Amino acid sequence: MPSFNGKLIAVNGQVGQRADAPYVTITIDSSKVTVGEAAGSGPTYSSRSFSGAGVSGFDPARGARVTGPLTENASSVAKGTLGAVTAITGSVSCGNQVPGTTNIKISGSTPEGTVGDFTTTRVACVTTKYGQSVQVATLTTIGGQPALVSVFILKYINDPSVANAPAFTMSQTLQNAPGHFYTRVPGSGTFSVTDTGGHIDGDVIEQVAAGATPHTLHITGDATCGSRSTFK
Image (cartoon, rainbow, N blue to C red; front, side, top):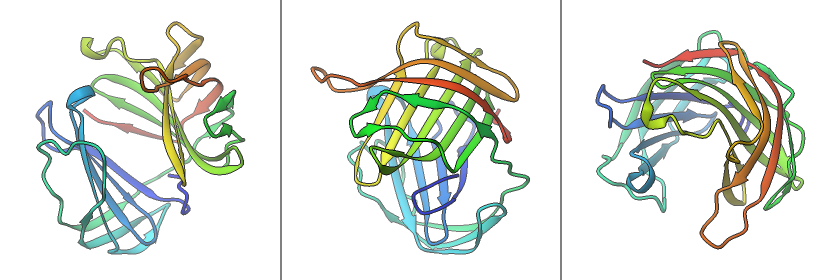
């Protein structure tokens, strides 16, 4: 995966079989491992994150080893009933990872400026019990500053509780500015998701606090997945 500090390894999965089990994300770069856990949604959403320096044998295309204590990172999000993660040990083998390709363009202005061309990019097809998605993660610039942008094209088919979820979303992160999240303008544009990639051509609107004026962006292009993942 692209990051501000070069490429990193990401490991994602749900812990246990219960529907409300925490979702865990482990990210590893050349000097740090971070473990994040999250549960719930909307007003019940909770999360915690922990980091440590115990990384060795790091190769972003092949894998890494991690071992050592973890320290909790500060967060403004409620912790809920999530437990503390105090240490980590083990190894990751990346398998046959392929980055994929995309010609997606984003026009319009974010709170920090316009979005530049995509550079280091990973495109993945993900299938879960809820349906399919195409996930585009890229390093780019916003207003001339380095930025990470993620575009998700979503096709939920198997769960009535998420049937009205937005068909595409976007998030942006700058190193020295708050992040922003955008969802599809209701009824805007077209999108498609297949086993090998996706297409998007529509508007997304920034999610802001009541009374604030949101920014609107237009996203258009195709994405061809390099790697595919399936979660039951």
